[in-house]
Image (cartoon, rainbow, N blue to C red; front, side, top):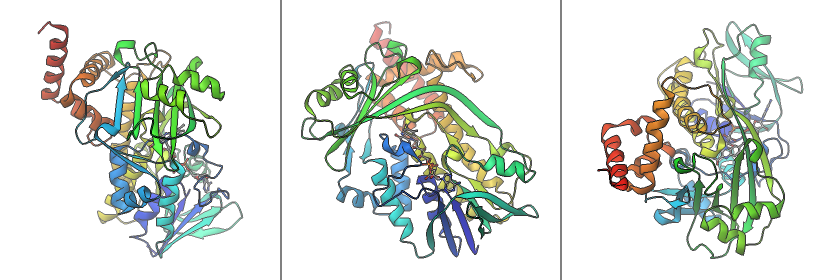
Length: 437
Ligand SMILES: Cc1cc2nc3c(=O)[nH]c(=O)nc-3n(C[C@H](O)[C@H](O)[C@H](O)COP(=O)(O)OP(=O)(O)OC[C@H]3O[C@@H](n4cnc5c(N)ncnc54)[C@H](O)[C@@H]3O)c2cc1C
């Protein structure tokens, strides 16, 4: 291709640009946020201020596309947690160790700024400030991206990476195409992030995650849902999550009080560390995916990535990893020899496989929340019953927890949790625990 244009220069857009830099003479990344500076913050994607955990799969794909980036991040103050440095609690109990656990501790802006620098360093990639306002489609294929300034950037291939509130559906409709069918699940999630100065109060801890599980009916009767990540600049990024009427607020004292109802490491930070920034809150009304793969016709030379394609409940930390895996889908599609000017069904099919896995995991877990009322997948009561038992076994058994953690980290497909050997082991563990062997 002569030129590819990526609309949206945040995490998903940067990954797409990295892939396209191998297939186009020139890649233009059009980003509307004039305020994104070297600190990676900006104003238009305010979730950047929230704690972001990078799942193991997301980390491995980050290193795949940007070799040496882990060392670069660590040199800049990020932390790499292995083994006991990463601790998961459920219903107040420390979970059994999961083999091979490795997680990176960094803020989202730092991570994104590092990726942006790498992408901008490629000789054939140009980052441009400007707002995409429409598409020019001729004879069924994308020929240009129209900007809000009235310019048209000629292109043979366009990526929509403009995030959850993408306007692509409107642009398609204006051109006589259909918008994608949308699947939604109402979650009514409140997320709040506080930042604390980090000393040696938790030793080499990098990640702690605590959540209510099956014993408490997934309601915070034992511990609140919360987590912390050690990040650059000697800080803790601490997150609290709550649903419906129980959403955490911005008041620092209320934040600390709520941390004291969390698992022990969060209580320690609440009691001993100084808060170094305001509490930032975020409301996520729903999980949402746009199923472009189900459309009958679509313009050639156009793909959709990141939250513009699927934005799932952030408590499972899947968004950045999905963006990276969709970049892999794009690479596999382009490598397959498909003509870039044709409708990119091969991309959408691959990306849907990835989204399916994340969606299945997050929506099945969300349905356990009393205020979430569907849509239920076929066979949900059985899925839930089995899921609860595997989750309970994962708290006490390292083998079950290793697979469970691999699935949560998107290193394995959720179907790994239905392998007969795993189900049998979970049953044995639970029966041994109740003395009903
Ligand atoms: C509260 C919260 C917590 C989260 N925590 C995690 C986590 O722990 N781990 C994780 O992996 N994920 C997490 N996520 C998800 C993650 O933030 C998203 O998946 C990720 O930001 C998606 O990246 P993106 O590039 O698709 O979209 P965005 O980051 O939303 O970026 C879209 C970009 O497009 C630009 N743009 C928009 N319209 C236009 C236009 N017309 N023209 C040009 N540019 C435009 C915007 O300015 C923006 O920069 C969380 C999300 C939320 C809301």
